[in-house]
Image (cartoon, rainbow, N blue to C red; front, top):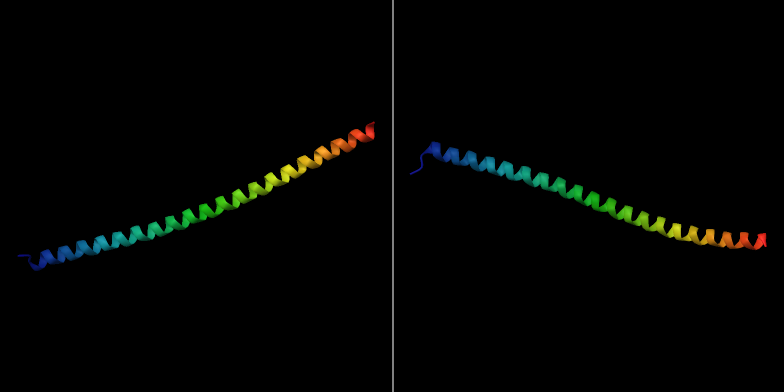
Length: 75
């Protein structure tokens, strides 16, 4: 049979485990928010890189056109 001291010790242990579970849950929420932030940043960077790539292609086409125009005026 468990005496009063044993029950108090069990209750204290249960409270300690509950506190630790709450700490783990809070840390998990923080990590999740951080991962979502990184994912959002990655999406923004991907979008920016796509825009840079499109602008580079457009500039390359413009440079080609300028080369052709310059070649005509030199002839």
